[in-house]
Image (tube, rainbow, N blue to C red; front, side, top):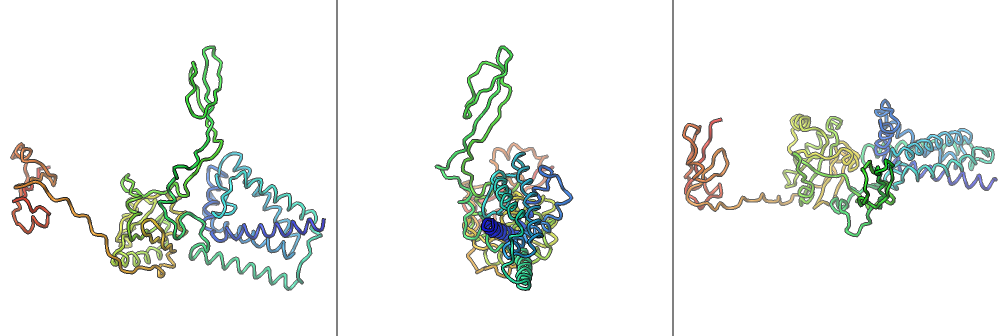
Length: 436
């Protein structure tokens, strides 16, 4: 039993330290996961959502410390009781999520290792068994060091955890496990290979036969050849297919998808602010300075946010931001960078730099050659061009306009002006403005 307790003690301690440090590396990400658990579709505890970040930091620091305490033998009864209560809570939570299919990823190891709720539940069951061993045999847990050394190690561990948590909050995670890490290509991570495995699905169709009996027919998706009245269908996923690392990212403006055209810019600065109303004021100020310099040095600058257009206009005016914002899903923006606002420097969709607003001074902005604006196609019309309310029309259409409908008419014959308008092959332009 002494050997079993010793093994369990070391294994549990290391497991809790690793699990806690991975989440402490990204406490904002764990806070987002807690918000999902606190949401109406899971535990429905909305009053806890504003405190998600504080709870996140407390839980992960406590998790690391319990692992340290167990290994060095600091306050064994307090430690094993805390471990037991914690694992009982998380076992219940993962079972609830798995059984009712509430959360797809438990967040136990952050973005470093994805686990389904069922996988996480059985992992917690295994840990629970080991913790019950050390709980019932707590007398076998003896300190490795004297009381003073044990206390010093515990205190230093606590201080180190607080420092590390504060550091990643004020900057960015020390290790980035997400598909938006530096040197990753966003478009490549959005692409599904042609030979990628497809999802295996099972369709259970219910029909009411002529005799009034309801009968089920199972297919792989094809509609069954049955003489009867269709009642309904249920779809079960037997095997998950390949899912691209990035599958919820898009850049939109007025309903138009501009993702590829913007990402493929040679020198692009993306400003990420998932919610401008929650963005740090100091962050927006330094973003203003950085983007002004970027534009001056030849870079294309674009903002991504899930904030509505009216609020965007207010913030652009308030901070005098000299670039346009595009719409992007809030969850995707939270995943890209743990800073509101944050900044990405890209080259043809490849991320070259990712910065918290506190680290904007590290942004590298060497002067680059600005991409020339595309020139309009030369006008093929000769002699005279006609415009009605700035729309190019034919002479026949102009002749059909009644005189009383015309507000004003302008004739342009100046060769210099015509050359600027790329209309060198014509003699004049006639601009007609109609009455409203």
